[in-house]
Amino acid sequence: MDSSGDDNAATEGSAISARIRDRLVRAKRRFNANDNIADFIEPGELDLLLDEVTDKMKSVLEGLVIDIENDHNTQGTARRVAKMYLNEVFRGRYHAAPPVTEFPNVTSLNELMIVGPVTVRSACSHHFCPIMGRLWIGVMPNQHSNLIGLSKYARLAEWLMTRPQIQEEAITQMAELLMDMVKPDGLAVVMEADHFCMQWRGVKDTSTKMVNSVMRGSFLKDPALRREFLSLVTINK
Image (cartoon, rainbow, N blue to C red):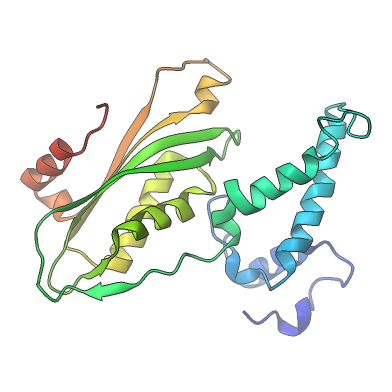
């Protein structure tokens, strides 16, 4: 990405987050919580962002009246939390998509394929509480489809889910990504998850799960195919 003279619109002494945000604004690119912004981060800037988030996290802890100077349990918490968000929990925002090798459908496979359950971990964009669940993917290929390796479905799911999300939008993103990459006749995605924003706070209900689905192409048009897929996934088992 061309930063146009090292970000002319941002002052040289501005925070790295401001410089990255300026690039996004000038490119008229959305940067919602569940968007990937890796194209707008230049080499070495994630380390600078880590330092900035660490400093701001210290301010949050101080605002919570936690003694981060003398409490041995929280002396390094700001740095640990910053690293967790940038490199793990929200990694899918700041890093490019994993490499995926695509293979032509040389034998013209056209039967239902199901991948799952894929374990997924995310965080609710409303409260940053964990979302822990499972994902099933159904693919109806055609002779022009691109086939990808089994493990790549899990890697792509991890990349999309490691962002602040709501479940409904997360599986829609997954469906759009796979439709564009695989180009099947149809695609189905089902997700079942526990939401700690319900279990840990609020109503504190530990038994409720959320299950939702996205259907594309032949799965949307063919009720028999949709029933076959749903009967074969092992939700609640």
